[in-house]
Length: 77
Image 1 (cartoon, rainbow, N blue to C red):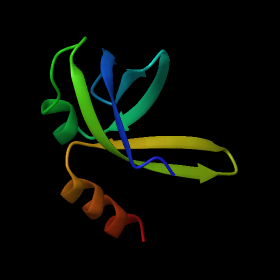
Image 2: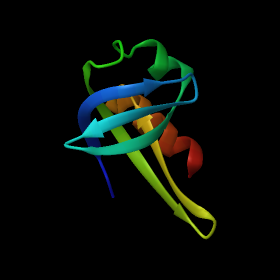
Image 3: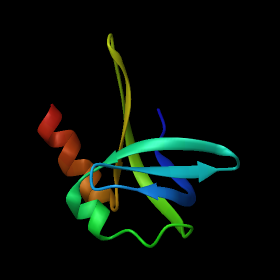
Image 4: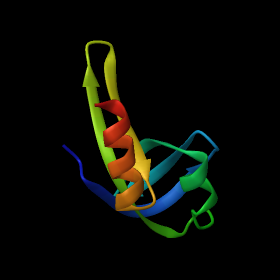
């Protein structure tokens, strides 16, 4: 599982962001709450994550705080 990602934001959309970590770009789905708290493109960011692995694919969800991540985990259980 990927717990946290730290890197540079290279793309920012309301539904997802792309983070460059040492040359590897991760697509991370984010909530509007997290999106609104993000810095500008080309800024460093730290995102807490939850990785979902299912038959139809792998998804990475990002959160601006540990508390938001914990709430997400409660909602999916």
